[in-house]
Image 1 (cartoon, chains in turn purple, red):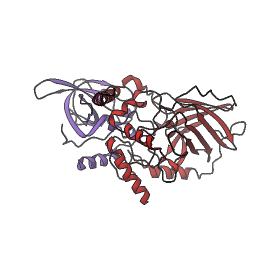
Image 2: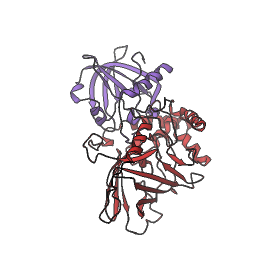
Image 3: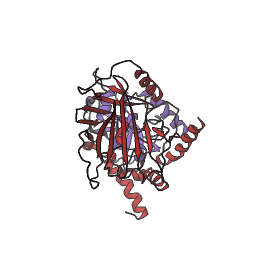
Image 4: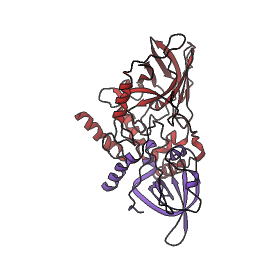
Amino acid sequence: MANKLAFVLATVGLICATTALEAHHSFSAQYDANKPIVLRGTISKMLWSNPHGHLYVDVKTPDGKLVTWELETASPPQLFRRGWRKEDLPIGSEVIVRGFMARDGTAAANAAAVTLVSTGKELFAGSPSDGSPEAPPAGAAK
Amino acid sequence: MRANSVVVLALTFAFAGLGLSPAPAQVAGGRDLEREAAAARKQAEEKTPIPRMKDGKPDFTGMWRPSGIGATFAWEAHPAGFGTASEGPSIIGDPADGILPYQPWALKERERRRRPESAYEENSVKCTITGMPRLLVYEFSIQQFPDKVVIFHATSNIATRTVRFDNRPPLPSSIRLWMGDARGRWEGDTMVIETTNLNGQAWLNLGGDVMSDAMHITERYRMLNATTMSMEAVIDDPKVYTRPWTMKFPGPHRKIGTRVVNDDEFDFEDSCLEGNTDLRHFKNLYDAAHAKSGSQ
């Protein structure tokens, strides 16, 4: 846990956010710092909506079923400033998502970082300016 | 220094319920709070003329940003950590220890609000107005007229205040509002805004600081030069606190976005309700906790 926190804190400086805007909700109330998760699946939908974007990813379970995960990102303005564009996330493309699971036990998580498998391009999704946590280390697993 | 350490330590424990953890000082989501406040203080030393209205009153028109604070989650000094955008210094200038002078029942209520299942009760997650005085810690835009000042608060939940300077009678006590009833007056070059008629239901921040309908807010704004101003607010709420307390910022407010077009301005819409799936998850936590306790 200490290592995870160290990583989280070390990555804070990577994303520069200088705004002083109101956060939408307490991330620590919604997501569990003790439940980092890494998901690999294909994009089924991207919702460019406020106050947060949502990436929907179909993930295959070990028994072959498809589960659609709802992955919260920063808001569209914040994603835009960080270099995200609609064309970056074509439906059906494979992604690896690192984040933290929701406390309510649903198939939902905060998407702290998203990597496009085809290009290896990493897009940070979390938003420290509104309290979103940083990505857990790549080795963290469900 | 020792007192500060004790405060940070105490808050570290206080935040345990929210899963927050301490962070190295001055690492704040890309912001260096101390440097930010120092830069604002330096900017305030520039000998630039205070803009004035035709009637000679200082002209506060423009977009303003508080400097050196991270007050989204708490107004007392607090560490950064999981889910907390930044650590933040206390914005409580009086009492001098920077700790809110809570009555015991209200402190217990704050502790209750810091449980994950309580987050559903708060307004911001519902995309509704978060109210006064919470909005004082974020950016805002002022449009000034001879008889009124209109303040647009930078929030995803539309919040505008019209501060009247025309001596009209106050609202009756029976009318209670999230933003309250704001009346302005001038003390020399200082703009004073008094706010009453609050409904007392808002949280002061995501960390659940408490207010009541008895709260009376007195804000004082004073231009320091063309691009900075000082702001202080005295908060009196005898139902919640043992004494009035003062909100004070580590550096002056800076005027932004008025001369150079940049992405600090309101250049994106933020329609909060369109994708607010969070509420469902917060309600799940709320329902589960209340089903368990049988109190729903």
